[in-house]
Image (cartoon, rainbow, N blue to C red):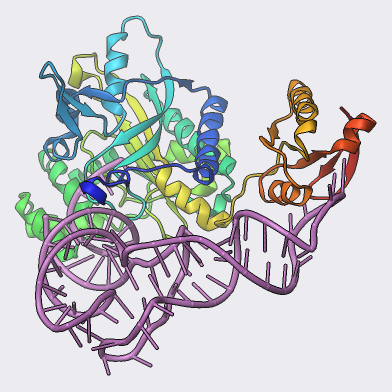
Length: 409
RNA sequence: GCGGGAGUAGAUCAAUUGGUUAGAUCAACAGAUUGUGAUUCUGUGGGUUGCGGGUUCGAGUCCCGUCUCCUGCCCCA
């Protein structure tokens, strides 16, 4: 750290070297393709927002976790930690002219100032899918189906993950059925969401603090053992539609999925790797009051957030850590400066034919050229020497089979 | 925010209780090899041991601080 200057990226921020971009592109390509295949329209937005927009929606705790600063006119600005407030702002601004339901998608870089752990950085890319203005559970099915499609496009097996689904509405009804009044539900959700992370005794204490009697607390724990969702029409219908769509094998009812954010009102879901090795791959749910918080009209929506960090770790674990990029393109090299023009001419010709060509920038000995071409990701290589120029043709070698074919210079 | 572990060549790791010039294997580069890659042989370069201070005749090794990474907890995109 010479002179006190660090030459590392700031804590939690990421550099993407070419070998990292192989993975990132694999993930992003799957996001884009799956979004397009499911009819979602791409949109994008500024990375910075007014601090108040982000802080208001996210809640008091998260306000502390925002990267924020004052610009030169003392405007309070923050880097977005999630896309939902931005989406709400954009939709509300054109609410009168847009045709609902909307199906929008984006890959958004988001920032959050907090402690890092495995699968969690201070900066990440989050693929967002939102369907706005549709009450039918088909919206949930379409969103989850698209996410499953993306996982398949990345190369994961269907058996590598499970999407755990529940419903806050259903859970609320069960609680109400045990005599726990609706005004206590928010507190109960918060406490029950801690199951598995905190000992039951502490959760019971939280529930007691929330105003539940001992009997009600006991009832709440009993409800969390619920394995059957047939009493919930929306969940039943959702599983049926998933069956029709062909991905019901990856869904599982899990009353324990609650999600921390308070704005979810209906079905909620989280995707985990089957081995239980990683954090949630994606998550989301239905939130009915998105637009009202920023002055829009009440609109039901389903949203899904899918970060790039965890899924990339999962992919590397399941597909192998070695580069999975396929070979493609042609490497063109030459022996002496006299063959440089011929090499450039051939490169230009191949490129005009649609080939990807990596032209050597200086003369090389054949051994070195082929050695480097072989360890690069080129599929073919052609090396031009004096004899080739004299003859007017060169040999293009397939680097995996060793086969050679003539090509005119 | 709290706790634990770790930082030595580009990479993975050695280095006796604190003791000579910090080594090895890969990788890179060069040569054997002036016309076609992964073998082989030979050679070369590469380090302020994360950074700063302290103890000592002497510190990669011990102490303090700091930075970074990993790993639990808290929290959640």
